[in-house]
Length: 130
Image 1 (cartoon, rainbow, N blue to C red):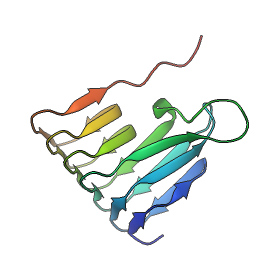
Image 2 (cartoon, rainbow, N blue to C red):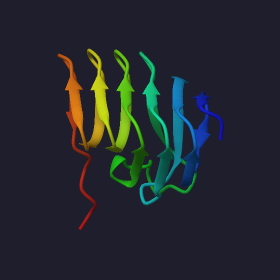
Image 3 (cartoon, helix red, strand yellow):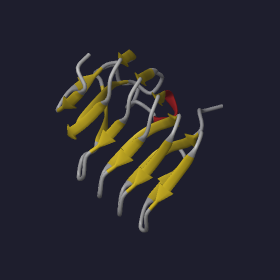
Image 4 (cartoon, rainbow, N blue to C red):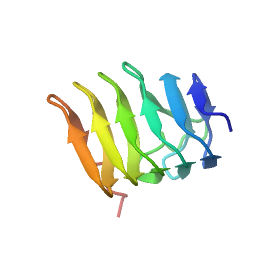
């Protein structure tokens, strides 16, 4: 796939980019609460300022996708712009930067370094039901 994604809707599955990924406008993950999404990015990943990753229920009636079932594996660095909102677990090889008022519903695992600017929010995803 090409490196710039904007306004796209993703269904459950595995997605791979051999280059960078820049998200320049809102994207949507559409599915149910049990669906799995895996995003593999060989280069860097940027979620631009004021951009949101939206989780939307499909028509099965089983709820919307859950952050605990979304994994983003990034081979270089990650940058979340100001007021950006991200969903899922980030597995980052080099470094990760969150700008002012950015937010993450998920987990952040970085091999090298992380820069968290003021007024960011990180929320752990809800656990699976018993």
